[in-house]
Amino acid sequence: MQIHESAEDYLESILILKNKSGSVRSIDIVNYFDYSKPSISIAIKNLRINGYVTVDEKGYIELTEKGSEIAERVYERHTLLTKWLVALGVDEITAAKDACRIEHIISDSSFEAIKKHIKGK
Image 1 (cartoon, rainbow, N blue to C red):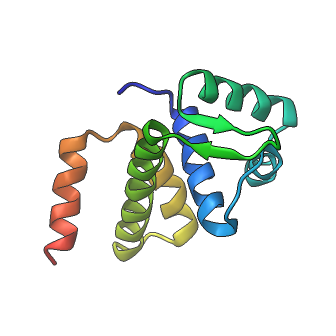
Image 2 (image 1 turned 90 degrees about the vertical axis):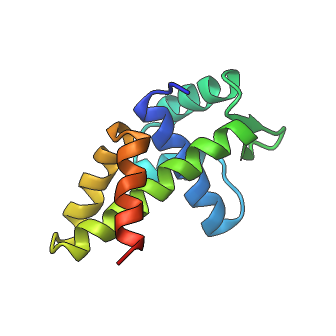
Image 3 (image 1 turned 180 degrees about the vertical axis):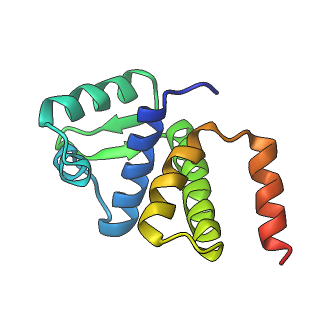
C-alpha cells in the first residue's frame, strides 16, 4: 500500500478531527494545517479519486475503509512514537514533530518491534 506522506497526514487529520468533533469538512482541515483552501480542495479531490475518502453533498468528509486503515495505522504510530520519545526525555513538542516524520518512513517490522518492546515494559 504505497501512499504519499502528505496523503497520510491528511487522512490522519481527518481521523483526528472526526474523533474530536464528530464531523469533518474541508474548512476544518484548512484550519488544522493552516493551509490554503485551494490546497486542501486539491488534496481532498485526490483522496476521493483514489478511494480514500467520500464527500457528501453538504461537504462532509468520511474516510472509506481503505482510508480509515491508513489513518489508523499512521495515528497509532504517531501516538506511540510520541509517547515513547517523551518517556525517553524528549520534550513533547519535539517528540510530536519527530514522531510525525518517523511514522511515515519506519518499516512495519521495526514499528512492531518497538511496539512490542514498549508494551513489554
